[in-house]
Image (cartoon, rainbow, N blue to C red; front, side, top):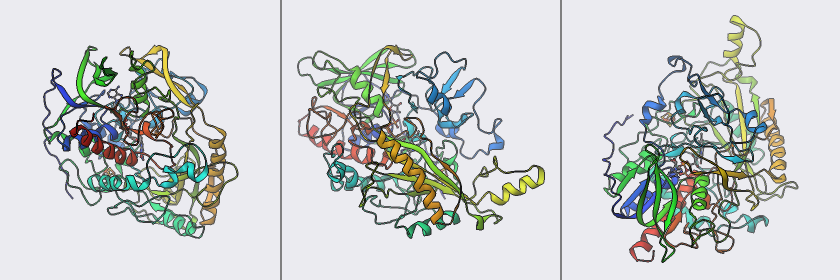
Amino acid sequence: MTLVRVALAQEREVDLSITYDAVVVGSGAAGGMAAHVLTSQGMKVLLLEAGKKIPIEQELRSMEWPYEHPRRGEFPPGNHAIRHNEYTIRQPPYAKKTAFKHVYSYVGGWGGSDYVKNILVDEKDHPYTGTRYAWVRARLLGGKTNIWGRLALRLSDYDFKGKTHDGYGEDWPISYSDLEPYYDKVDLSLGISGYKENLPHLPDSLFQRHNKLTASELMLRKGLARMGRTVTPYRAGVTTDGVKNKYRSKCFGRGACGRRPGGCDIHAAFDSPTGLIYPAMDTGNLTLRTNSIAHEILVDPNTGKARGVSFVDSQNHRTYEAKAKVVIVGASTLESARLLLLSKSRQHPNGIGNSSNHVGHNFCEHVMGPGATGLVKDLVGRAPTLDDGRPGGFYLPRFRNLQDKQPGFVRGYGFEGGGGFSIFPDGAFDAPGFGGQFKKTVRDHAGAFISMGGFGEVLARYENYMDLDPMVKDRWGIPALRFHYQFSDNEKKMCEDMATTAREMFEEAGVEVIGVDKEMLTEGWSIHELGTARMGTDPKTSVLNQFQQSHDVRNLFVVDGSSHVSASCQNPTWTIMALAWRSCEHLADEFKRGNL
Ligand SMILES: Cc1cc2nc3c(=O)[nH]c(=O)nc-3n(C[C@H](O)[C@H](O)[C@H](O)COP(=O)(O)OP(=O)(O)OC[C@H]3O[C@@H](n4cnc5c(N)ncnc54)[C@H](O)[C@@H]3O)c2cc1C
Ligand code: SF4
């Protein structure tokens, strides 16, 4: 075991009088990868990040026990986490007219989480409007990667060529074979733990040591094998064997990343600062400016090309310009669309890169909610084992609409789940009795529960879109995003099927079903936003080409999930990084040839 505490990379002084080779907006998975690849190719890069750089280890306090915290990890008084019913019965902006001092998204759980109060945005400063939407944003160096759930999955040609398979939507302008070498590079440089299953619809990664399944999970795996379905250890974007990176450590198996929502203070779980940005700084080619909110991509009036980025300093509220030969946007799917739409000029009156009118459209994500909870009776009363000392439970990959054709819906869904002993005993709230008997019941049953919840593909549809609100602005005077988005019948039918199959699978595996969730969670719950500047071969119906390069402006690239053509049902972050790597290699080649 090595616990790494090294001096952070030397920060270069920001010089806004020079023209950088490239300016990158956003420092999460996408922007971090862009900065990493471009600096490794010798380009001089300025990285603009809207949020602060915070002492993340002190924030996450991964080794703190619940009883060591004055409120067992909950928010201080005056702070509020938006609850599920608030999202469903109220219209955004959800923090409007509230008496609370600070309001945050749901993701810290009810009662909120003290560990993320400086990581999540305060909804009071960052309003959005329109249809209901649970928007989770992390504004700090590294963005959402500081607290992501770590499930790291590849997409397959069932996703990239979805239209060819079932006739719906558009195919991606690339195939799995185009991206496979870049998935491999991401695996090798960042580390991923998992178990090979040889599934055509969920390609294996170059795995490091996998986590063990617990007794109930193994039972489910065996049971579902009889149905031709797979339960595999969580494919975690976590290094279990170590990677060549002085800022990161191997996984100690403490399970702290599973705490609502987690983070890993030794950086065994991938996060963009230690995985990508600090190594990029060590090349001497990266300059970082935090507290820098990009609000316009500047255009050369003679050529129509991008010439830099205008940004507001979040602390002094003053506006500055960063000059660059290439502009790379990686501010996350919704923020990137917002920035493109904000960047109106004579040459680009609908927003930069938006001659197709597709920026902000074709939004897609994952639908969540349905799932099941079960009890394995044979495990009741067993002696406790350390089950949650690992970075995740299990994954049950898609099985619908592969060889079969479902009558009610196209595409598919997978389940994430877990079973066994955990820091807070499952079932404690529902256990009957009181006193000694109650405690015994809780202890006896604690390791016998197993549960799982579905993640289904939301279809990309032009009519699901975001634009700029004409009235509402954020704290810095920048127009807010307005949502026009709702689930369709396909998602509703898919969710009905999820609830049915969750029950069926538990029953087949001999797990007693004690609860089935049928309700769909609010739009946005998955935190897997995609599609607002999609790639394609036709500039009339897409925003970017296969290298995430704007069809309209050849020195503008958008390297985050906004480029995805469809959502797949697999989590997106590993694909975001593989795509960004591929595009930035291409970008650096083109830059050297003078083609940008
Ligand atoms: C609790 C949680 C669990 C998750 N679990 C998983 C999972 O298991 N698997 C998975 O694949 N994904 C998961 N995700 C999603 C994953 O975190 C995202 O897919 C990933 O972080 C996207 O990377 P990104 O760079 O596009 O966006 P982000 O990581 O959000 O980074 C964007 C950055 O851009 C900055 N920015 C925004 N606007 C501007 C601006 N105008 N100017 C300058 N900077 C700006 C932001 O401050 C931020 O730092 C989870 C997310 C959360 C929050
Ligand atoms: S289980 Fe591993 S990845 Fe998760 S917090 Fe512990 S060391 Fe980090």
